[in-house]
Image (cartoon, rainbow, N blue to C red; front, side, top):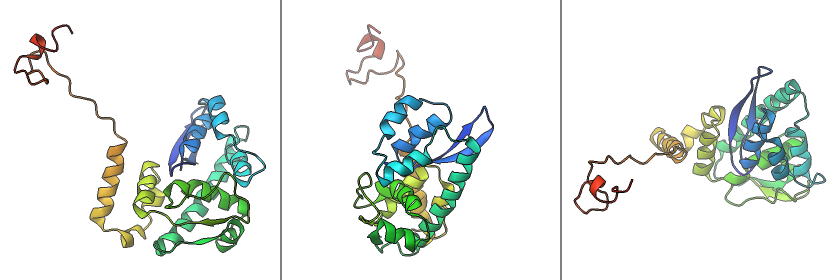
Length: 219
């Protein structure tokens, strides 16, 4: 997501192909389902962006349902290496807000404008000030000023251990803080089922009666 930083391992069981699909947002989560045989038609509508824009061109290529699985796997493997490299550089100076046009940032990190667009798509929900990714062109000024805690949590949510285990994180937060953020994010995604009330338990309404003789009488 990619309204979210989320990365997830997806498996195409029928072909035996394992690919890591970027999930830095909800767009990507649904696209992962499409790649592995999920609800492609619903996702196609939600991913639809003007193909004349940089973002539209990136998503058309990156989430191409008609592409060969092996080709797509290589595409994402290459992207993830680039993505990790950029994050390693950003985390060296986490309080510095990197700014520039899309083209200038692509040149700064020695990547194509297309790949830079993908990175901007992925990091957008972790930024303090979001970029206009749906309408930007290569001359649009963008920023990479990320919220440190939010970025780390989004990496955890994405199960992107190769990102949230980047050594530079330990220079930003203490071990205790990293553990705290990790648990907070894991807990936020855990569904807690309410405790089932037994018929002979005290009624939760506070009447002092047994549940079966009070609110649970007709259940």
